[in-house]
Image (tube, rainbow, N blue to C red):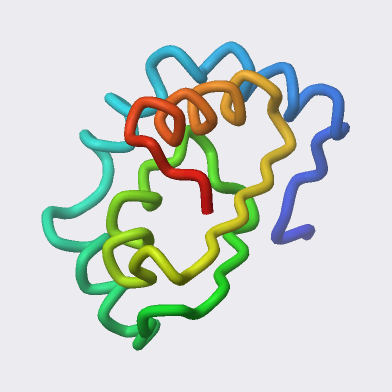
Length: 99
């Protein structure tokens, strides 16, 4: 018996592109309160560090990451779904983040 299921990459990309408009809501409903903050603390980030978030989605972690990194830090986010990245880019633009 297999303990994992394989999905074609194109299927995954299309699925997350379709979920992008409501992903923040789904994420908010499914993640226990305080989980993000606890995770950021566990990373022990300091101002000026560089962080790569793989699978950044809509950028939900960006505000906490940017707070920890400060203006001298750099945050890089990648995602498989273009719609997710578009929303993450929009957040960065709206908040004036260029690093």
